[in-house]
Image (cartoon, rainbow, N blue to C red):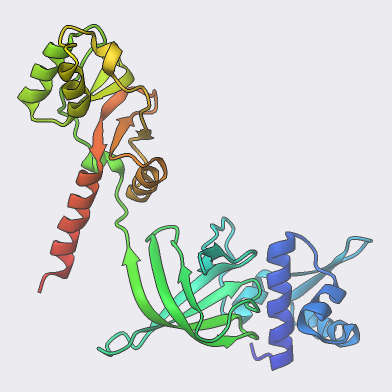
Length: 299
């Protein structure tokens, strides 16, 4: 469908405002966004409604909203269940903006790689040479860092010179969880706990009360207790109860975010019943990423 530049501009503005307002958009709001006369908007809406791209809503809260054909006309996909893909500038997320499409160009050029970023929302806060971060995307967990080379306000697109790009594998934490691990009980002595951990060559062990995990004992905890002459103390006296749990179905990305957020090197993996399954460490995560890197990027 062939649209004039003005029609595309108005239709894009309607979709952007409809996305942020979550409802009908009034013509005056489109006019304010585009800096055009309200009469121009009304006239163009008549044409867009005739083309089946816009529907009118009557009443005091009425206005316009785009049809499914409007998205097709602008080469956009209408998502029924949409996950926001953010854009960050100077460490801050740009409000009311989400990425709806990413295209790569100049992939075979050894000196440059560019991407076109199609967004919903206004791009007025971004300028040429701004460095931005796009993502992560919901499925591939792709994150792109790049410098803005161009900005198309009519089609709501950015052209980026890609500086860095990272994709995190779509793995579940259960795939890297160590399940064969020695466990302790709260009534065990420190001396016995030390023997148990030493036999397994672990840096720590979870403390279980039945199937419920109630704490964690590390080699540092044991060394500290021994230095104070507490070899016969109970594990419950030295264990740490400040533990970080994660569901076995969580993604690798969620695990990474959780270790960073809580500043921990070890995650306790549990099932839906919150029962102990195993342990996943930061080293496990990094090892798996390194393994995948060697597999996919070897010469």
